[in-house]
View (cartoon, one colour):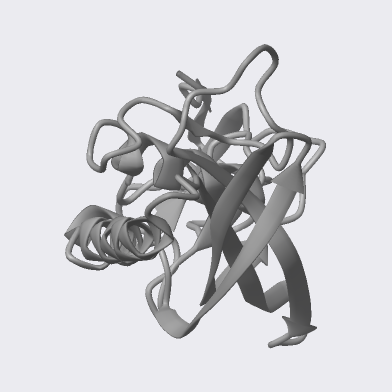
Length: 213
């Protein structure tokens, strides 16, 4: 998170009345939310480092359990006039997958429940992750079974609905590169004694460059 940065053409986000509380630098909100979730979950559950920022299975023979993180959907509703401002409703979908031992299916159910609990505990107790959003609006978990040839997978789809706001500042083509200052002296400092100023004839002035870096 980055505070107190002026971003003329990037999206700023955060709670109302706090712009620019934080910014995404050259990244989309979806990408930021997805990557932050993956980074936090890696090596924090029984899935270990097998946490991927994609909805697709990794290539090769996967090792279970594993976690896939992607964005399910996003809605943007206008929340102001003038400069484009939006209230976002975004669902982060966490797909936890576990190989089923058909000899002990109940143990697999319990293990998946513990994995789901570890995922939510890791995310919801992280101040850095939670403060990325205005609100954690909803959480819904759906358990299902996937048959992949000889392998049977037990999956938990955890949908976390979050809300936040963005402001898209316009890009200004010209730059404030310099300023000119003119001084029209007044009596008794005006050297034009016949018509003491201010008379619209500056006695001193200068152009001053404005640093841009």
